[in-house]
Every structure is written in C-alpha cells, then in structure tokens.
Image 1 (cartoon, rainbow, N blue to C red):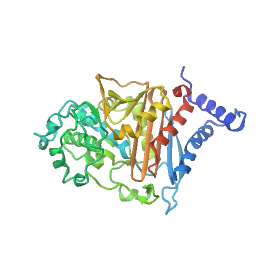
Image 2 (tube, one colour):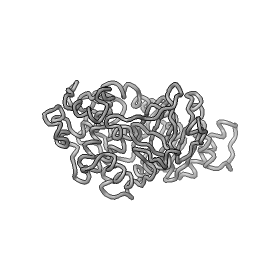
Image 3 (cartoon, rainbow, N blue to C red):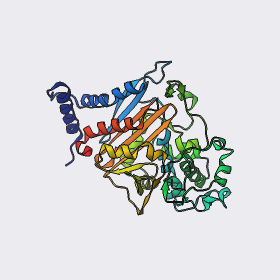
Image 4 (spheres, rainbow, N blue to C red):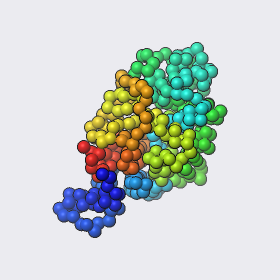
Length: 392
C-alpha cells in the first residue's frame, strides 16, 4: 500500500527522533524531519571530503524540498542556493540521450541507423558498422573514456574517428566513453540540421521547462556560477574539448533539475514525442554487471540494495570493459525502477536518482569532485527514509 507523503515524512520524523534522542515528538513538522535526514547524510561527507558547497533537492510526490550547504565560492563566500549553477558533468549525457530519442520520436533518425548514415565523412570507416544505439550505449567496440589529447578538439576529432579501429566486436562489450556518447549527441543534432548547442538550448531545454540550464553560462548568470575545486582545493572550471557539450557540458541549478526529474517521473504533461523520448531513455537495452543500460540513464530493479548500486556505479564499471547481454527487444520503461546517473568534472560532482513508482527523487550537486560511492550512499540513505521498503 502506498503511504501518503505527510505520513511518510511523519514516520521519518518519529524514527529520526527516536534514533537521536530516544523518544518521539509527534508534533515535529515533516519538513524538519526531512531536514534531519538530509543533514545526517550530507554534512559528514562534506566535512570528510572538504566540500565547500552543496545543493540538494528531494522530490516527494511532486513537491520539492531544497537543502543548501556552504558556499558557492570560497573567495566571495556567496552562499549556495537553489539558483546556484553547478557543472553536472556526465549527468549531461541524460539530456543528450533525451535529445537523440526525441529526434527518433520525430522520425529524424533511428537508433538502428549506422553512424555513417548521419555523418557522410565517416563512410568507409569502422562507423559503417556502428549503430547510433551502439554509440548511445557505449558498445561501439572500445571507444575510450576520453579523446586522446591530440584529438580533443573540434578540428581533430573527425580524423580520430576516421582512423579509429575497434578493440573488440561491436556490440559485445560496454566501455564507458565520452567519444561514444559525444558522437551519439552530435549525430542527433545533425538530424535536426542544427549545431548541438542550438538544438539543445532552443528546442529541448525549453520543452522541458528549464530556464536556467546552459551549455555556455551567459554573462548575466556568471555571479550564480559556482566555483569548482579540485582534489588539491584549487579553483577550477571545465575547459573546452571535443564534443564537450554533448558529453559533459551542462551547467544548471537544483531548481531546474527538480523540473527535469519531475518530467522523468511524470512525463504525461509533455508533448507526445517528448513522452516517447523519455520512455526510450528509461528502456533497458542490455545488462552489464549489476545494472541495466538505458539511454543516458542507468537502471536497477526496485527495490534495490545499496551494494548493488555501489557495484553498478563502481570505478570498474566506468573504466573497464564489461560483457553485455542484450535485451531483445529492449525492456520497456516501467515504474518499478531505480534510475540514476552520476557526473563529474575536475571541480564538481553530481548525482541524480529517482523512483517513478514511488514518485521520489534526489538531486545532489557539489563544487568538488568527491567519491561517487559517497554520492550513492547519501541518495540511498535519504530515499530509504522516504520508502523503507526500497532499502531491503
């Protein structure tokens, strides 16, 4: 039986007070109990990892709760808010995947098309045998995590792709890759006849209702752009690279990411092609280790235990080839899933997770690239308080 949100949060309040004080206060507000839960999960990690600022949003049955910690910049001491812009790294891949799936819903391409069909300059290369879906699911045949330094620019990337040779048979191994997902997004934008930044900022983002999400932060918004810090606590922000917009380029706020999560939780209010696009990103294309690969998103049957999430988000999954078992046909989008994606740049760390069946979700943004395991643990801890059965 589904527990109404006020009762869920009151139960959370009771459990937290019993845990910390040994007695329950029935009068404690639900918002206070959720604050306790988020504080307990977030503050120790911030302290241990030396994170200057974090913005957190928790979504419960369409209602957003915002929790802001620390500063967006050590120099200015500007406090983090729901309108602070953070780099979200590879969470950007979920936006790219939605755009490509939107192109498919409008008949502009098919995931089964070969890459060279949509970029004639690739004809005669290995990409005559690599599908758009292979690129979107990291199964082209061993495209690396990053472009080689000499090819990491818009002038050299075409030559890199033209001369690239697969390390293993296309479709047999997953190797997480910016050049793979980046080319996926590049081909999607070509199907619209527009550069990627234009079709993303002028078409997809407005259709999702996102007003403060950018590939290039406008001058008027620079005061809201958090300063990132690297492992040595030196200030850094993401720099340019080949297909950077497509693979890791988005900067956004918790306020906008709440809208984005809500669109994924309840897509029925969107236009039909965008509904179809979101369903395609939530579909399962193959299994690899502990997770099922969607488009951009990574999926787990719900309920899900923490250990499975940690395995699916491990460095081994990101850095090493993984044998895949294709799901034919792909498993359709369904509510009983735990859907997540991590993202990092040199100075930022992001994580989004949500459960359509429970209408709950969480957004974690930080201006430091801290361990992914810590992000997963925070999210699992908070979401489990909202739905204890989900942590079995």
